[in-house]
Image (cartoon, rainbow, N blue to C red; front, side, top):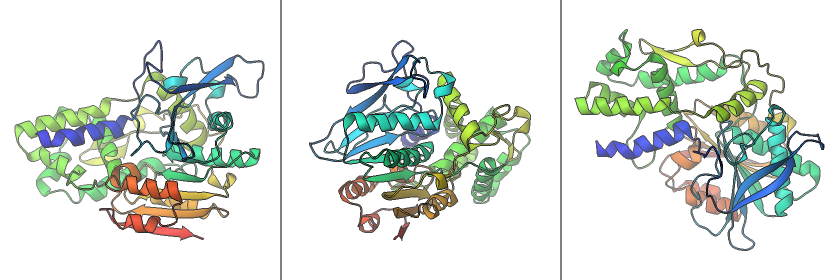
Length: 402
C-alpha cells in the first residue's frame, strides 16, 4: 500500500490546489511579502485603499523574474513552497483579490479579471521590472494574456514571454465543459477489464460512495494524465475495485479526498469569475451505472448570474513570445483551446507544445522529469526548446509560428 501514498498526495494537491490560510492573518508568518496600496473599488478614487499583497522571491541581480498567476479561478499561491528549480531567477507568487493573502474586505465589484489584471500591472510598475515572464495556469492563462495586453497599452516594459499551461482562450459553449469530461471518461472506461466495468455498471455505486463523489474524483483523475517514470493511472486505481480488501479501503479513502474543496471565499471568487466571464452554465456530474452524466437535478451553479463579459483571446493581442503547454487528454482545457489561442495571436512569436497523454498540468506534472531544463531554456531565450523536449519521457510535438 505504501507505493500508492505518493500519488495519493499528488491527486489531493491537483484536485484541491487551494492554500490554507489563517482567518485572522491570511498571510500567516510568510516572509518576502510586499504590499501595494490600491483602490478597493475599481475606478473609484474615493473608495478606501486596499493593501494588495504578493510574495517576491528574489534571484541574482539581472536574472529574469517569473510572475505566477494561479488558476481556479480562486486559487492562491503565496502560502505555498518556493517552486523554483534553483534560486538564480526571481519568482513572484500572487493571490487574486478575495483569496489568500488578499482576502481582506474585498467588495463584489472588485472580483473580475479586469481588476485582477490591473493589480498585476501595478505590481510590475511598482517593482520597475524590465526582464520578466508571466506564467499562467488554467484560468491564469487568460489572466496572463489580459495582463500582457494591458501592459503593452500602458507603454511600460512588456513581459519577455508568456508561459501558458492548460490554456483558456475563450468562454465555454453550452454543454462544452461537462461533455469534455464525459467523453474522456468513456475512452478510459472502454480500456478497463470486464470485471471492473461490471462493478462500475451496477446500480449501487462502488465502495458505498455517492455517485456525485465518484464523478468528482474521476474528473480530477482525468485531469492528471500520464505521469513520467511510473505506471500510475486512473485505470490502475480502478482495478483496485476487484483487488484485496486493503486495496479497496485505500481506494475508498482516495476517492473520498475529492470532497475536499475550496473555502467559502475561494468559491465566491470562482463562481463570480466563471459565471460572468467563462460559463453560460455550470453543472456538476454524477456516475450512474458507470456512465458519467450531467447532474441537472443539482442545479446550475451559474443560475441568476449572466455571462456578461465573455472572454475571447481575440480581444487581447500580444506582440511578444508565447509558450503554450497543452495536454492531449486534458478535459478541463482541451487542446482545441490552446490551438484557438495560437491561431488568434497574429503578432506573437509562438511555440505550442502538445504533450501526448498529458493532462491539465502538462508542464509541471506530465513533463516533470524535464521541466527544469524547459524552464532554463525559456529563461535564457527559448529558441531551442525543441532540443530540450527531445529529452522528456512523454512524447511531445512542437508547432511554431513564425
